[in-house]
Length: 63
Length: 314
Image (cartoon, chains in turn brown, orange):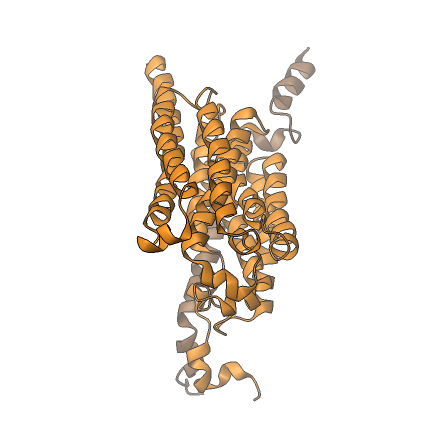
């Protein structure tokens, strides 16, 4: 089947679709970056709101 | 097909990406970004630069979301005011339902992601800011009380407090004073504008102080709020967020601002119309500089303190 030319609608919405694509790509970068930072800082091992809970738990297990 | 979007004649009315972005009130967003950044950097606790960047972004998106919800609710007022008639909803490019959907979605997104990126105190403050601006200010008090500017100013004053909370996980005297700076700055700033731009608000039926209490009373209000603002702005200089540089800037700016407010109070309409509201316009321009330089000085103090720590560590 032969390819048909793009509908006029696609041209009209090109800017909108491109903008949304960039926003979604930026969202992926943000989530990936935040995950990397949190993993490196060891924050996934802490209970919410207790900054030193990892240290305390480790010390408790050691003692 | 009955889908209007497939009608080429509708092309002129087709919403572009910039129209959806305009719903987020980008100019207001710049103030949100700047003050939130100062709040975050002035805090004693440091956060990872990428987390800080994300926190500022989520605070900005939250502020933008409340702007979209404000435009959805106020579309009828916006349509009759010259300043706002070309906004995406009154001009017909975006529907009210689309703006509401975008505002609600971005509100949920920004609060959830700020909580995940930083802490839930900051996220809670952001959620409260959106609720306060949309429900308390826009839906309830804006069309009901001439103190609407004061209440609206509170919503715009939260970003530095959220930035501070994002770094520290709490609220302190410094963040409350940073909140007060924008909160008390807003009424003199907007009332000065209302003194020389009265027609717009009259047409929209929004109860501005100039209309409900008269212009002499508005002039007096500008002066009273400026006195309280000056006291709190100087008090900020004696906290951990302030310092000699901030205090120097604050003394000069507040002296100029008080002088401007005094001049506004001691003028009447005949004098103002004679020079085409030169004093009111001058005060309004100074108010823009006033806020920017106060937060700029706080940012400079924070930078100096960081550099001092770095220098000491070497």
